[in-house]
Amino acid sequence: MKLIELTSNDHDRYKAFFMNGLHTHRDCFRISPDDEQTEPFPTKGTADSFTLGLLTDAGELAGVVSFSREGQTRQKLRHKGLLFRMYVAASFAGQGLGQQLLEETIRRVQTQTDIEQIVLTVVSTNHSAKRLYEKMGFRSFSLEPNAIKDGDTYHDEEQMVLFLNL
View 1 (tube, rainbow, N blue to C red):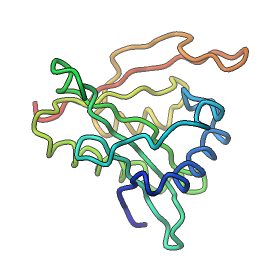
View 2: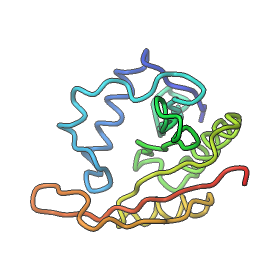
View 3: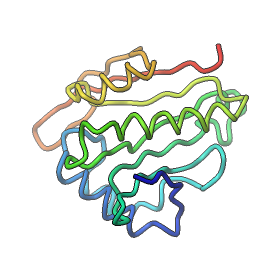
């Protein structure tokens, strides 16, 4: 696997891969495939707003994750960043790709000395994702019941945080 930074030039490849995740694991995301249809590329390609991808030897995406500073325009929030849109294709599950994506994201964020924490949300029934986040040092700090409504089905959502350099 090759770890690369994806940019808006990779929009079509990223969109096709992420849409597959939204369709395949609809219950693991807070956005629907319909929501994603017209969304722009999720990050800006800067040190504090980036998307990483893992490519197979054949050049196909196997996993992605995005990060963006939360306080882009808010001075009092600039110490936080948001990890979002993490997805590893089912055919690559259990191979450590999610951990590799998280390790590189955390490494990059730690080079931004003024970012002190990374926050994320996860559907509370996504136990494998929660285990991985906990393994990487994230801790749950909030549970929102019925945070997501997909048709007649509700999903609770947890918020997790990783404190850096403290």
